[in-house]
Amino acid sequence: MVYSTNPFDIQNNFTNNVLSNRWSYVMQMGLFYNYSIDKHWQIKTALQLTHYSNGAYKLPNAGVNIMTASIGTSYTFQPQNIVYTPANNANFSKKWHFQTALAGSLIEAEVNQPHKHKVINLGIYAGKDLSLIHRLTGGMDISWNNGVKYQIQKKYNDSISKPDYRRISVIIGDEVNFGKMSFNIQFGVYVYKQFVAIADMPFYQRYGLKYYWHKNIWTGIFLKSHAATAECAEFTIGGSFVKKKKQK
Image (cartoon, rainbow, N blue to C red):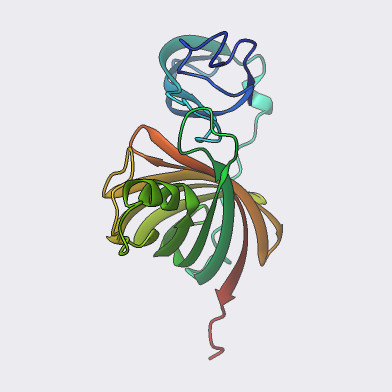
């Protein structure tokens, strides 16, 4: 999280269209490469992207994107004491997983709105383990975005017939597991969408973290965006069910 000392204010700071809420989310992604010179010395390089956004909870929300590159070295004092244990894949099997997820969020559709709009998303997914840490997932989303509904009512105020604000999409993604947590990337394409809202695109991305409180129950926080424009930050609860292999 990041705290902003001087966010957007329509009376006193209307030029700040980047950060309009006191609190914003920080998302960092990077590529890292380490090169060993000898047993003691390593060269470390990295290319990182840092993104700041409040997930459209408050507008305006242009956000901040910072690209950084770094290079450095590290020294290991007693490399002979480090023991590398190979991964044990003896008990690994490529199991199928079935998940349902219910997400909720609050957003603004216009600057300086006196109230927030609810966003609800129902996800139904299936996934298969590719390795001990990677799981390929796919499925569908059904969303009810009251911010889109507000835009429709405003545009078609004098019309009896209005477009449907509900949306259906198909998604494909990758879940990277580490302990009880996992990092998730999803790419979605709308297959049912009757209205093109502000900053809309035919596709979207979702990034986020899950925490498995139980092998079948998890919670998570995700950022759904259309390219570089955030639609909402989703707080999610879900269930995961593993298809057991038949005993031979």
